[in-house]
Image 1 (tube, rainbow over the protein chains, first blue to last red):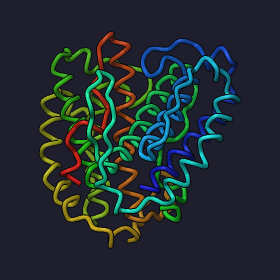
Image 2 (tube, rainbow over the protein chains, first blue to last red):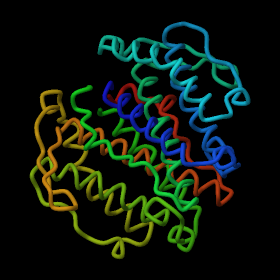
Image 3 (spheres, rainbow over the protein chains, first blue to last red):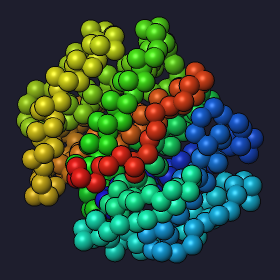
Amino acid sequence: MKMFFHYNWMVREDWYRWCEGLTDEELLQRRTGGQGSILKTLFHIADVEWSWIRLLEGKDDFQEDFEGYNTLRKVRELDAKFRPEVESFIANWDGSMEHRILKSEGRDGTIDIDQWGEVMRHVIAHEIHHIGQLSIWAREMGKEPVSANLVGRGLAETK
Amino acid sequence: MKMFFHYNWMVREDWYRWCEGLTDEELLQRRTGGQGSILKTLFHIADVEWSWIRLLEGKDDFQEDFEGYNTLRKVRELDAKFRPEVESFIANWDGSMEHRILKSEGRDGTIDIDQWGEVMRHVIAHEIHHIGQLSIWAREMGKEPVSANLVGRGLAETK
């Protein structure tokens, strides 16, 4: 579980650096699928990760719009603001939390019942899925995307 | 670990069914990024999963080209042929295997040293990443992609 979060943070940082080579127009350009632009997809990844962890902690969710975070710098600052709380939660994760129940309100007002272990894996898969989308957009721009390889990153020590 | 594999197999099956609504031309149409077409990307996902498991088992890799598997039916048959061995390996996975060492020859001839736990997570992330790519291509075709949600699939029982 922990290794996947470290993988995601490492890949996300690689993408932030990759984004430094783009103009604001390229970062915000409307694209098909995902969250509709490169920067909004990165904002969404950080937002969703933090929001689910907040839900597990029984705390308030993040409700702000992307409009307030429409530069690379602002998204990175927001991510950096969220990170210590997420890191702390992940560092303190242990197997005994796996089957705890989270009840949350779905988009249609019904109550979803999920185990914490499902939520954690959902958050992990959520980011990897969106990063896959960024890789297509990168190729469509004629650019080489960040490597998605998990092996070769020295992650075994972070599990 | 196991829940992620069950998630991937479920999502992959959803995509196979989604592909039933496409023509052979659409499945094979050259697209930007990923493995260059929808069907070849699905072939690649099944191939890579099986090949890494075979490496961990110390057995021969799969070396055949996509050219022999260029229909949806053939890819599904190949996947079904691989699956029992992969399922058996995953079912028998336990934490004691986590730090075992795999030495494998990288593309440039150097020897890569990975822990089995890294390899397993690499295989999981590999599929999710490529599925994210398919979701962009689906939107570009004006079609709704398969849901990537991990929660809500009743996966907690398969871990």
